[in-house]
Length: 288
Image 1 (cartoon, rainbow, N blue to C red):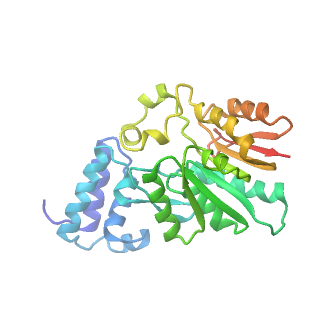
Image 2 (cartoon, helix red, strand yellow):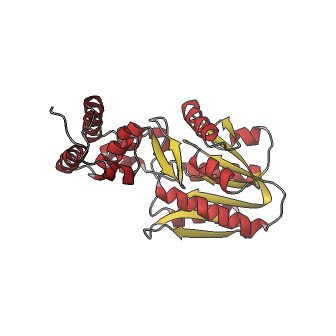
């Protein structure tokens, strides 16, 4: 392939991606990644020739994305809450709607526990890349954050992110809340974005998600509610009398998860919260 100017490489990528039913914006993201430039820097260098080696690796990655590999895995990173997180195929790619879950937790912590100075213990269950746990720890220094994941490979990514972002988070390997139940540890807040896709729906997911993101982080049994049901057995064993539970849920699952929490914690204030797109995406319980 002949040498291209930056704008020619971008135009080629956009049309190639569009022709193959992929988001053409991925071309710009990959080009910026390869050239190590922000958006304004990229646009100021449109008339420059691309070095051949860089051009070849850029084209290779565009083809990989067309084959289904998520652009975030190709770049090895994703933005979340204004910070850059390492991602690999061992973890779910952080989504913008999960930022809304973090905002909801931060708001309710202030409201439910007041503005005292004593530390509050938070557990992020199924932490994956560590995006939720790390963001909570950095956004509110009053929070003493721990995070669990069943997969050691995921925890390695999360620990790398915590180190890179200088966040104080303690990571534990284990299934849901078992590490805390076994040690008889009580906490103030439990937050989780568990696997919630029903098995049937998983088969219909796009190849970009289904073939590359980890199955264990996506599917929540036949109904999609398996992990929430398991939480109802475990939460009463770890929560203090005054506590918060915060879940991300799949579209259409809000009322079912709310009912589970109301049955487990009679008298709690439980609310389903819509995301920016008007979908039921979060369920919060304020207990005590």
